[in-house]
Image 1 (tube, one colour):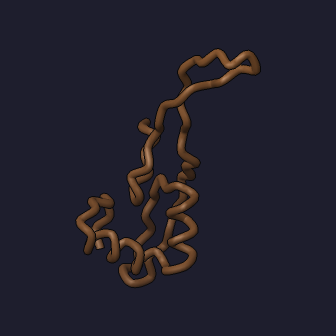
Image 2 (cartoon, rainbow, N blue to C red):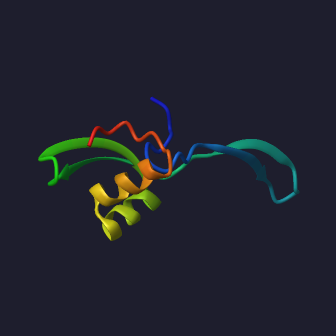
Length: 82
């Protein structure tokens, strides 16, 4: 199961753990992903998406249908059939 947001495309990035003595070891920064079911009233269907917290905020602001339409207009493949 990949740790990638289906809507925003956020994925893990790499960086360093820095100790008190300033030694650096490699680490991964994982995105804040939530697996959530959404009901799309325009189509009357439920969809399950793995979304980041940022995408969830945008869905709450715009609505799921409008947000997916906006992303499709930008050329993002969301994996949701509208």
